[in-house]
Image 1 (tube, rainbow, N blue to C red):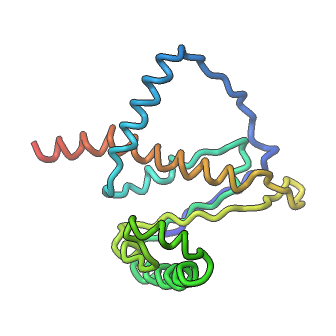
Image 2: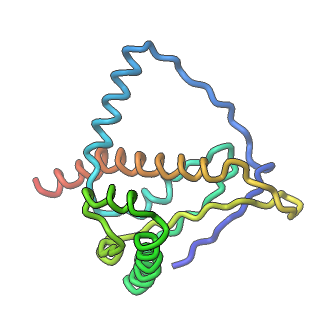
Length: 175
């Protein structure tokens, strides 16, 4: 199923200035602890397509990323094969002895079975440039940092959505 995708230039999107409330130190510490506790509850959960679509943030309206949701089992398996091939090279050649040794306590290696069994994979691609309204290439500055932040916010938003909505639905369904 393909959706109509609309591409907007950065110039055509209205800028909304950031404003925030400054909280007292004790309130910030409390909120930080609550947020940590919330995210610490994260586990594998059912995936709701509509939530994935709505939880990707937009830093400075540049959106230097593309999120691709993969559900097709054959495609997920092909992705697994590509990743495992590269990861084996990482473990054997690129990472070095100390790095590999440090990872042993996590019991991880280049075999990524979960890529076949996960209900969806969300692939994230960074964009080093976009296009201005006139079609000229426009550099996305700080694209790696922006993409990293977007991934963190996406994970947090999915977690918050799950705890607020899915648990209520599960409780209702079981009653």
